[in-house]
Image 1 (cartoon, rainbow, N blue to C red):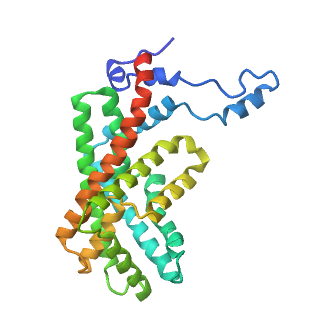
Image 2 (image 1 turned 120 degrees about the horizontal axis):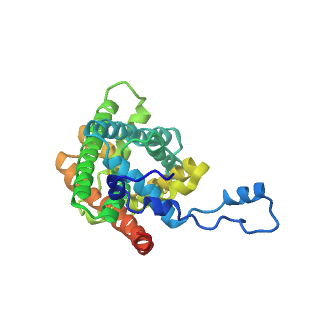
Length: 302
């Protein structure tokens, strides 16, 4: 006997049960040349349907929307601290490499460290939330859902930024790191402040938010290659010198504490243009476009 679905579940997940039945034809399912075991092996190599990817990411957003405030606060604080290791590891690699034209290509792998910690540790990062949380909003189209998403964005952003400053303060403690690492930290931080003209920073943030949101979209189909996917995409963000609101916050906060930038520089030349760019890149170019591609199928299945 089928278990009845409560009205609240129908409201929260209007297409969830339909999507669970939306599996595409399994690879080799109709092949007369394969036995059942071989058909199962072939099915494991079938790429997930676009609707299935949409639903996996949307369900992550739904789960995030239902988290309590205190859970969001602690997870967001942890994520901001973890992202600080992108800055530190990059500086350590840079300090240990010769001053050559390819040094940036190698040291940029250090930038991936924070993202690996956050994503594999399931911590709450603002740029990731711009994709996962907006999908329930686009699907349900309810004011209550939008307000929950707005609450989450504010909490996560504020806590991510606060803990990024805490990490920068810890990096400034005297005698903790060798002089060459401190020099590399100073150099990296100065380069992260951004030009007075904020449009280049905004555009780099658009591309950065675009790539991070695409990474989140790709992870469900990456399977055993999740770690490699995170490393490669975030390495591109670093090597192209794109802007990320939280990874960059630690760097620019460090520059402010070192006296190489002012608080006005932090907000005007970094935080505001980077925030706007990451939101545009993650929300508009990934969430809206990918949802638009699936929306007709969602409507049919409803």
